Image 1 (cartoon, one colour):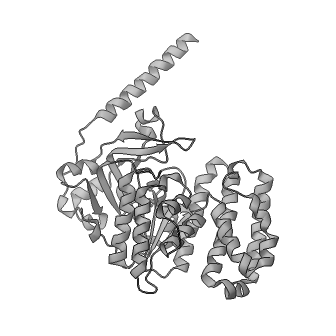
Image 2 (cartoon, one colour):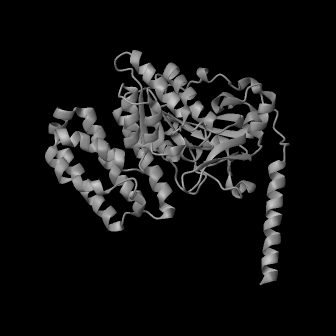
Image 3 (cartoon, rainbow, N blue to C red):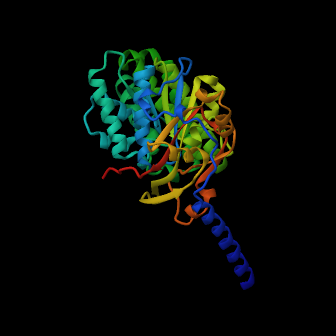
Length: 418
């Protein structure tokens, strides 16, 4: 037994040694690419008129530059493509509170970003974006105001709050009948029994049916928009129960399916020339790297080339890593590839490359058609996991996964709200 443990220790040490050596490697032979096609002024970013949805991914949550880049890309699309809708990988109901704030509701930006559903967004960077949207809306012409929405379905509380705020006024009998949904809470959602979750699904389906039957009456009091969002809040409650009942292997695919349906719902209920969505690279990419059908892949099937996906990457990533108890600590990982190696010939800390601009460039196509190992970090990583690149990188073929990329030399941790 002691010999087996000794052999296992040797194997683990050998793997770690190889990984550490790989992590310390600083030389990557990049192809001789034409750097004149690189953009470092994001305000000039634009997409073609046929694009209906622009997705911006982030290689890691908890990173300042990626959250700032959401704002910069959105501002460019507002100015250059008439975009007015910002959709985050965050709670549908919680984001409605952000939307209310940017339309003049009381409170502070720091408070409302805490409603998005994930602590990774409770940052000064997100608050700055929200305050910019609020300022923009003060002077926006009628019908040209900006909106902030969420496409995720992993929370109950804010969806219930919006739903019953409408029903209490416009359909009090329905509100009273379905108050049993009050037992579904964010705090207890992970400990709810299967019986409770199954019953909640049945109840919501009944509510949706009755809301549809009374649609004209409810909309006459609340307005059509409020009815639509109340109904979708109810639908989100159903979807949350559904994914909580799913097994681990189905959770991610079901979640991305529901997020893609949310995006399609926004396409039907907004009149923008283009919608902007953002989340992790793993959701935004047009092909999955995680063994399940992702949001971006589903959107590509639904609307084809009308979906435009932008990925991100960085050579040196410092980020706020969240543990299972919700606490944050700063972690750092490094990963060199041909894409971020080009930055040693660029003055700025980042560049944007639109792949369509280099479609006839043989050297660029060699790079974009080849495999690139990019950084991929979710909410957190442990100290020992960062020693193994397999825990924080994934291999993609850029041309298959994105339509463009924003690549950084170094990114830093978000500024958390106190």
